[in-house]
Length: 420
View 1 (cartoon, one colour):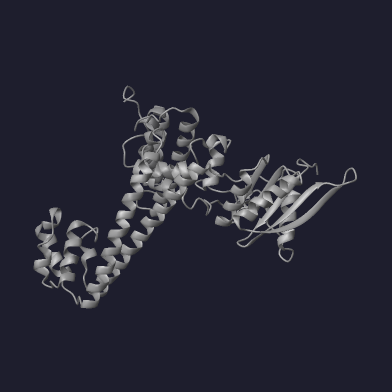
View 2: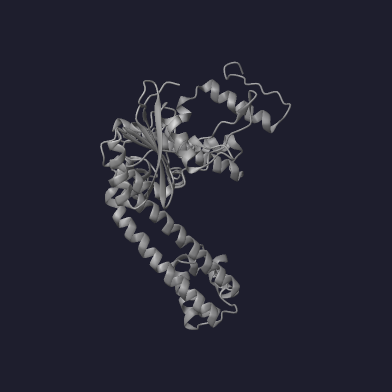
């Protein structure tokens, strides 16, 4: 195959060492010379590795993504004057079983890269990397808080306290006051129920609370609940502090989209950046990268169905979160959601709702791509957007098909008013 890059280096990254394969033109015309080097991963050694590659005339460098171990290697080389430093998905250069060694991995990367057969992954700029770290840490903190709430509910259940069967949130103001009273030693259900506030003070709720708060709450349960509540308070403060740091980083243009608040916008900027069109040629490629579109699985001209991929561990949940918020606002996206739910099986089908929400997340991604590409804020097309596009005849045919489904075998005739 035609060689696209004459002087290349490929790096196989590990925690404590890196294998570097260097390929440059040989002494005789038309020949290529390959050397395999090894360096430790201390940052000063990595910088010296970059200088050594430049002394050898290397212009293009490629490495596999290896999680956090790749970052110091990438940034040690990015500060030097290489033409290109590329990070690739390891799946694009996977070795055959029984033929894998560190040196062979590096040489395989060389073989593919020098012929232009590898495409690089998106690497955010350092300032966007800081936004990404904050957004990802917030996601993990929210997940930790949700896990702690589940542990609190488990402790209450083991004590026979059925509080979660009456209140929707065991960390709400009323529920927290009741748990604090239980920790302080109060065991009378009626007295605990009297701590309820707002809508919980209806006659039916008060009676249920009195029964739900009577159990076998011991000193051990009090200790466990105290630990859970203290942990929840710390996590809640951490989330609030992260929100305060993230809010100034949110782009105003993206906030014109329904469902895009400060957290979702900051997550987008950290994962994709403010100019996705510079890294992804089309919105469809961006959707494929974020794994919010179905994949292809076709063999012998038979499509065996496709499902969204397992990637996009951070951006996909944010888009789904934005989609749930968007479909609660009257407008084009809400109308599209209801149409998709009907098409996929109806509102009673949970699978249909999940598929429809994923489709709305896909739509939001494509809208955000165009908004950032054109620099024009999003303008909603209205809740009647789809209805206005239908001709009266198409609407009539749809309603007739629905009547035929309800009455199989019937013949439906439409008689114009003037003919009647």
